[in-house]
Image 1 (cartoon, rainbow, N blue to C red):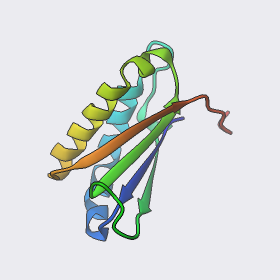
Image 2 (cartoon, one colour; image 1 turned 120 degrees about the vertical axis):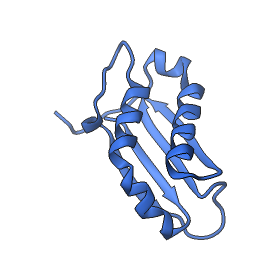
Image 3 (cartoon, one colour; image 1 turned 45 degrees about the vertical axis):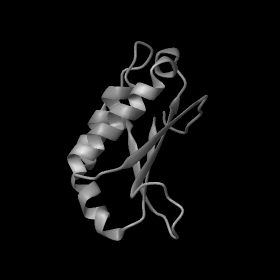
Image 4 (cartoon, rainbow, N blue to C red; image 1 turned 180 degrees about the horizontal axis):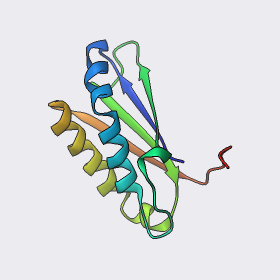
Length: 110
């Protein structure tokens, strides 16, 4: 069950991000789907986190955490770039940063 942490530095962006949450879940599920694991949007958890201070590199930054299937590892940069382009186009922003953290994961879902 992949997680997406959406960090934002401006409260005014929250409503814009929330308006596309369903689309973002679907897009991330599509990007992370691979031969080892087919995902649907209901398996993606999105969290909104306000970042205080001036340390962020972009107005919106995403950390996507998912299992390290071989196919995902091979296309990890493409996944990040695709999600970045999706968000820039949907939110009409000039900059969004995306990191994909691939790891061995355990979870409580049955």
